[in-house]
Image (cartoon, rainbow over all chains, first blue to last red; front, side, top):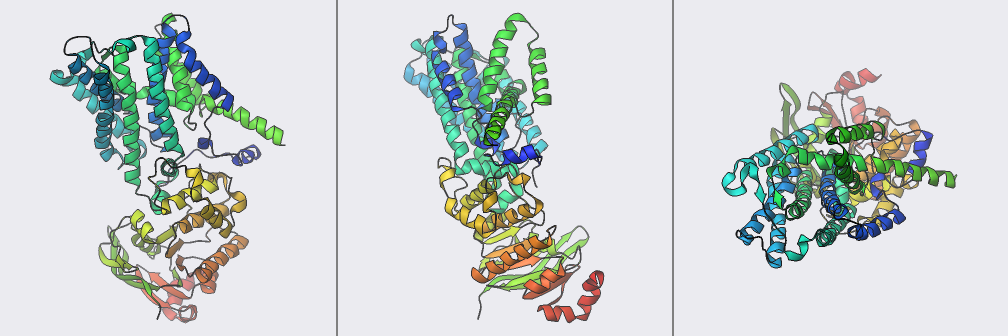
Length: 344
Length: 249
């Protein structure tokens, strides 16, 4: 079935832009901006007070979460409302092993801690494999609804399985090892892992498989008719995305010192959707920029007002109505115009 | 003696009460350039859908190049060597023309699941070759969705060729094309057949295209073969005239 895509402008102005690289090929940020952001990410812990560092850790973790979601949405063209399930599975896998290693105390050795983080990878991958097995048989709205249903199903299992997961109490008192309890160190630790994972995602999006995903997004029937097993390709991508979400989730628990079932819930699943739409799904950096804005706003707006949902709702409304390509599309459009006028 | 490349026996397919193909026997030899014609609803598209695994036959067998491909899925049949260009172009709209073809070339190379290679560095030569063969070289940086209808059909054909087919199926290759584009496209079809000895089977409503390019014509009606033969044989056949040409002349 041909997948409907947004029409490409056919006006004279549009004609000009067709000579540029396809939108998804662009990172969305120019070299200097990337350099400044990278430099800034290194000095965040030097800012006064702990708060910016704490927000920084959340930005990093959630940007990986949103980046994992965009493998499914921006690259493969399917909307998942259940990505939180794998974030949560990763968080619970790490939290449960941490708690077991701590054995009632607040101490955990480095090897045990790293092992607990690593455990999130097979657990979230396996979860995504099982869910994906059913999901990849569908596309469009059916894919979205089923992803939501599976997300809620996993949420409910974690929510009601008191004996193992602690039910709606969640798990409290998960501590990283000594040095990493300092948010500054935890920040650099998170930065290293998120940077490595983001680099991996970037490599995947530039690989032949990355283009298989774009083929699936643009035209599933043609993808099958160039010889690609489309279900298998969708499943592989779903497992990859679930695994990256799981890694993000694994970092979340020890930093917050607790996990709760809401990490698997639909609110959590909505977060990467918001972030990606804000930043721009057509750009590799879209989810990252979205997380930067969404999380900072969340952190600072909630200090002034309890109407956070109203605030973020309004922002999303404005972006979707007036800048449907996300914030990076505005910047990108401006860059393209400059290039165009210089070329003319 | 030429090699038989496609052998269809007793192919049957119904949709509800509609018998789309009825006990169809059909064969193609290597190097053939043949056409299937028939009024709307004659079963041409169903026949293509059955050959490429898009539909599953109720009964009958399809042998391709000595391999039983009955009930195989489309992606496997493509890998075995049957490529297909659709009537309504199925292209990758948000990618550039070059990326369209390069992705198809990489799929043909078995790299669709390669996670850590650099897509920009693989298959570029073949992509450029295919683009120049199909007259799309100067459009390679254009976004495919913004191409003209004629160029979209050209790209559709290029994507089908990227699969290195032994048999190429063309569904109404010139539908919606201008006279000039039709001439260009059918010229390419002839060249592919003569120069590369590619076996081609096409359906077409434009009868002058059919009679000028096909060496052998099969007329389908209500899912059954009415007559099969050279253009002259088909043209002079009385049943054929009643069923089909009457509507056009």
